[in-house]
Image 1 (cartoon, rainbow, N blue to C red):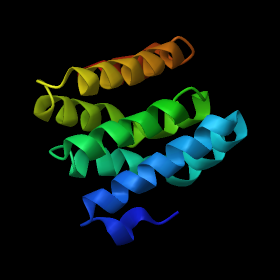
Image 2: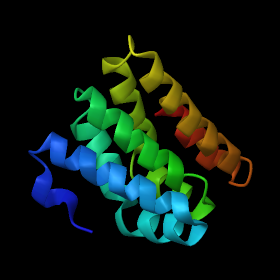
Image 3: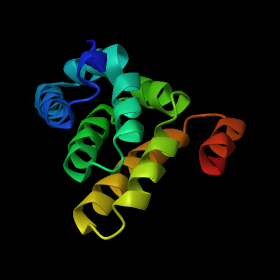
Amino acid sequence: MDLQVFRTKPKTLEASMCGLSNAMFISDENKLLIGQACGDEIVDIIFDHATHLDLFKMAMRALGNLSVIDENVDKVIRCGAVRSIVAGMRHASEDGEAMLIAVQVMGNFLLFARYVPLHFTRIMLTI
């Protein structure tokens, strides 16, 4: 999926994130396919649009859905997911819902961390 076309259209990206999130809700197979196809783009959108609260929350929901699949967690962490989430949290610190979603997604990452080497976990925590 090429979300690059809509980089300057936050509302369009928000609707796209909602559609992806809904599609992932259907099955783990969808989560894996979508995560591998555009998990990196979702991470970039979170970072690039950290100041757009509604887009941040919807993209975080999409990231949360794909982050229950270990292969996806590995990919998005390597693409800078933690850095992107923290950037969004800095802008959304007064929004309880956004902060809750961000913490839940990070919790999904930590569940994955039980299965990765210690040096990789240290990378996650130092970002």
